[in-house]
Image (tube, rainbow, N blue to C red; front, side, top):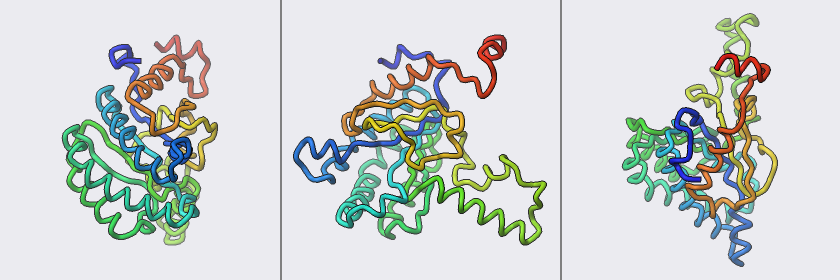
Length: 248
């Protein structure tokens, strides 16, 4: 699908992506898994540009999960080096496209050199307004919810919160995503049909789009295809179809 084929009045505000298939893509090339991660940059760049062009305001990329720390150490080390390389090389592209970079996740587990480069890029792009690019790094939804509950329990013990204060909205304010709207659309490449501990709380009413394409092959047109599919769906949020149609 092309950009001009999309309904500009029905662009999702927030798109989240599970970028799956780098390792399998490399294996098809008879290369080591890190080769797939290296070749994922083009897909990321094209996706960011497509998000800006289509008017998406938030793009969250599942970059490195908490569970990914359990991968072979040489792969983890390679991914951390790639993070530095990507941030260094892509900062100008982010500036040129008016993209603000931010992160969610347990950044204290990220090596200091990688973390410092990340912080530099976040600072440099902090005033950009076209798109907020959120990297989920050392992130898992269960970790995020557990951390939120720890803080709520601590503040309750201090008398800052009572049981009457705690509801869905309260918990949402303690999540790492408190400054972003919930995702309207989740894209997952690689042919897997699961959410892999990603934004579990936030995706209560998210539309899912699964693709068999391996992530390094993903391009702008594929992003537009996902949005086109999203625009064919009716989002009811627990209401009936008639209620939604009558409201329109």
